[in-house]
Image 1 (cartoon, one colour):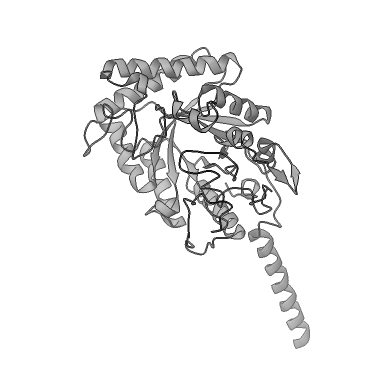
Image 2 (cartoon, rainbow, N blue to C red; image 1 turned 90 degrees about the vertical axis):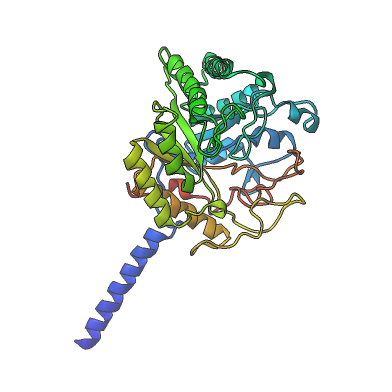
Length: 388
């Protein structure tokens, strides 16, 4: 009797352990695909055309594959792509060819839509990178007053959408600015010492109006994203955006989250932040940029931005650590009312590309591909069966 009871208990424990393993192990779960309008599973693929033009090759099990097809296969339902106004600085580095301008973005959007994916168009309103430390006004607009800048933002935004619509490439989402934590179109729209929200609001609202005016007669009516860098600034930013800048008519508050540069970097803290933002502002909340390294090694001599990265909580710098971090981060977003996640530049593998600071990639240890260009077998988080 006692021996039989022991056998039963051991059997039950084995079954329970097996079920837990099935639930927790990404390699044994049933894959699920998501529609973008239920939950955005996104990838920023802005560099991809340029990488391929410079010899980068993407593969699955050593067989070359279209990178957009590879992203689709792992569950990506949205491609994010940036656009600069007139990036002439690229020309000496690229044999006179433009990248991240309207026509390069057009190519990226077409490739995304051919794979059945939605698009988030991120307009930087600059000739160059725009982020919290720099939001330089395009050379063609420099010296303009606030009213002329307002009109320039409106006309440029509307013109861009009209052009893409003429090609049947209207984006489903559009960002009015990139990481505009400290304003945009400096110095006119710069937020300094918590002042000048009025000018910033005028410029943002002008871009929003262009999207809404375009949408009146459009089949696809883009959802509008306003973008802030890091959760520690998101509440302050959104509060002032609405109260001081009078920016109300937007759909999504997008947040960049990089644990390496964030003070809100535990899953509990991230979830709490999302919940607060969702409840306070009644907008969709998305992480529109994030990343996690799968190694600290380099594939080239270009120094990596995530160099000598240390583990965060239980997540090691490894393929498995990258995978588990992204699964847990995505579930945290979902559990706290968020609407999506977009991974930044997962196709930025090493190549002969020169981006002004180096040749190759400063991000190859954060991509979804190994140093031979093969899709990592552990990159499956976008198809994980999440609990909604």
